[in-house]
Length: 212
Image (cartoon, rainbow, N blue to C red; front, side, top):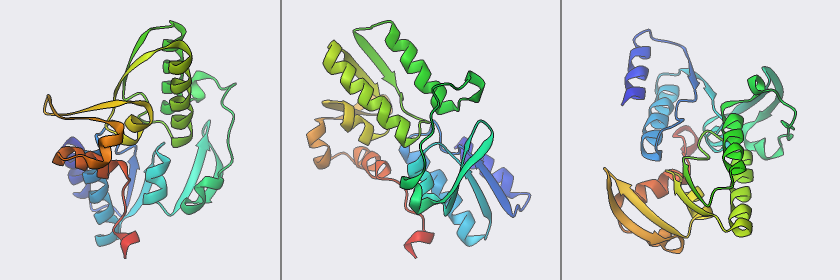
């Protein structure tokens, strides 16, 4: 609701251009879909330009036409959204903390936790705000560590694709209560409406403009 109010207040000024800086970060998939739908309508119906800033390349690929990739305050690549799979990789190994993005700092935080060699890890939105390449690296690392060290994970996430990648059993919560418990194999046959909403949100957002 807070994001929608901010967008409404911004429209009072009748802008011709909107800068949306991480507009969906820290939102669950249902609210994220609502915010993206509002932005989509503004672009199409009001002919408003949109600069979309995000580390979520799945959203960028589906929502944008052209992409500028920045590192350490500089544009390092300009590419069409449909060609993002051809983007050049960057090495952040020798970066300073102030040069790291929010997603990169989150990766460092996860690494620091693993130094303590815990037996159980509570991963609360551990991959949110990470771009898809770093997200895949973290998930693969966690999978390898679990197999090698015998770790137990409790993963909290609104992204059911991440849940299915890392978890064996899934408990779906809504308004503080469990509405569905299933194995990851059973996720395709879920029955509760909220679980289906999460599944639909995980598949990504398709803009109205790209449906026309």
